[in-house]
Amino acid sequence: MTEHVRCDTQGAQVAEMFPDQVKNKTCLIRGGLAATTGDNLAHGGAATIIFTGRSQPEGQAVIGHITRKHPKTKMIFILADTNSLSSVYEAAKAIKALDVAIDGFIGFPSAMAAPWEITLDGIESHFQRNYLCFFLLVTQLVGSFAPSSRVVSMTTSIRRDAPAPTWDDVNFSNGEKYHPLDAYTQSAFANILFAKSLAQAYPSHAAFSANPGSEYIMSYRSIAVFSILINTDTKTNFQTYVSSDEVCEWLQRKKDEGQELPILLQQAPKSLAQASATVLRGLLDPTLSGK
Image 1: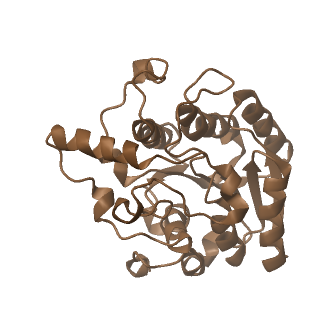
Image 2: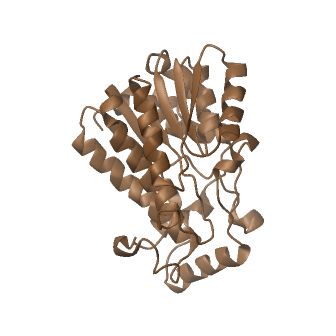
């Protein structure tokens, strides 16, 4: 059925395509597209959805929205402030204490092209909030994963247009060499490498990196500002915004280096529902097993 998953396919349709992979399953979701993705999983008949977030009001907004539409799906909120690794570690302990087998884990970024900032742990915010927190949750919870479970992280097509990461300087010389887009793509690349290593280390659990398309951002052509298109109930999940000057600087640097136009500018924007479809295919499509 995967031949019917197209760029305009919506997440709810993907959930309907693979009912056996959704019904009565338990899924864990963190990050910015959690509300839309959780809604689609509940639409498909998921038994339990565990949602992590930075504040109780934020979590309750998502839970309330999904519960009203899909009362049969059990919703659980776990506090996890990605600005603090200890908070994420405590969240992992709380999830393990639920004593449930996790069938799927989807990790979305929590920071996107934000101004220079370090976390409470002294780490550049994108690298910690988008990658290290995801890494910590997965490695702490891998013992709670059900057989044949799947882990899906989000990546971005802008990654291929960014410079190579500097793993020996993830803090960009304490911000002196910092650019928001470089920081965002570095965290995305880290998640790609983590998915590959996770799949190799745990062959019984599949791991994928999915590019949902340009759902979070409007085309540079239309606004010249890196801004977010998300539901109001998840807006607090993100730190973002790159000024038009920063976007122009980044594009000019690429031009000066003789690089091609970023592929992101060649993509048609997607809705949130369409963006979640790509991620859900990674989570649910049985034909991807062993790949």
